[in-house]
Length: 97
Length: 364
Image (cartoon, rainbow over all chains, first blue to last red):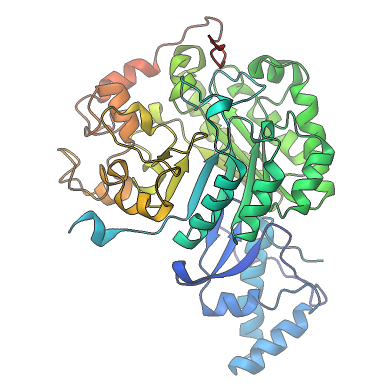
C-alpha cells in the first residue's frame, strides 16, 4: 500500500499505551501482544523490539542495542524497527512520545 | 479426525453480564427472550468463571450485556478478570456509567472501552436508541475515557436510517479521539431480525457505503483505524462465523449458560451446559452444543466438498437455521447455496414501519 514507512525521530521514546500489552500465556504458546479486540503473535524479532519499547529508551538506543545484540547492520535494524513501530503507531497501538 | 483431536483453545470470552439495558436499539442482537435480573449469576460465580477462562487459554474478556453498567458489581467483576490475567474490554452504551464509575473501572484494571453510538447526529441517534440524552452522555463518557488515558473504540451500527451519514460517524469518532471506529452493518439476529425490514438498507446504499468506507480509510490512515463489519445479506460469501463453531471464542449469558455464540439458542435441540453445574474447560471440550458443529463432518453439500469450507466454515449456523429451518444447511448468504435467492429477496424488502424497540417483558 505504501512505500518506505515514514521515519521516526531517533530521539522518540516509544511505549505501548495502556490497553496494549505483552503477556506470556503458556496455554497459547508464549508471548502475545494484546490490543483492543486484537491479539498478535509477535515473532522473535518483533518481540525483541516490543520488549524495548518501555517509554524510557530512545529509538537510537533501541536500535544500537538490537544491532549489537544480533550483530546486524545498524541501518537494516533501523529499517526493521521503523517498519514495525510505524505500523503499530498508525493503528494507534504505540505512542512515539 | 474427531472433534477432540482438533480442539482449539478459545481466545475470547463474551461475558453477557446482564440483559438489562436502558436503551431500546431495534437492532440489538440479544435474544427476544431476555434473561431477568433474578436469574443473573452472582459476583463470586463470575469471578470463578474469569479464573477458569484464563486457565483455559482465554486472553480477552469482553464485558457486555445488555448494558454491563446495569450491574452494581461491574468493578468487582472487572477486577476479578484483571487479576485472573485477562485483557478486559468493556462494551457499553455509556448510559448508567458515570465518570466516577468509569474511573473505578480504570482503577480495577480495565484495559479498553468500546462505546456504541447510534448515529453521527444527536436527534437521530437518540431516536434509534429510544432514549433521549443518550448521545450527549456517550460523548461525555468518551471524553472521560480519553482523559484517563484508555484507548477508545466507537462502535457504530449501520442500517437504513443512518447509512448515509457514515462520514459524520467517522468525524465524530475522530473528534472523540477514538483510536478505532467500527462501521458495523446490522447482523440479523434477535431484535434485529424482528426489525429486519425497518433496518434493511437498499443495495445501492450498501454499495455506496462500501466505497465510502474505503475512501475514508485511505483519507484517515494513521489517524484512526476504520474496521467494517460487512452487510452479509448483500454479500457473495458468508461470514466465517466467529472463526468457526467452538473454535476461537465462547459466550456466557447472564444466567450462566455457555453458548458457542450469542445467537446459538435459536437452534433447536442443542444442549447447553451452565457454569453453575460445570467447569468451563469441561463445557468447552464436552458440552453437546459445542461439539454439534465443530470441524467439518457435520457439513452437507455444497459445503462438504467446497474449497472454502475451512475458510468460512459453511457460514453462520444460526443464520442457516433462521433462514432455511436447517442448522446444517449452507448459510444461504453464500451464493453457492441453493437458497441464496431467498436472501437476495429478503435484502430487497424495506418497510418504514416504526421500530419494535428492544424491551424486557414486564414481570407477570
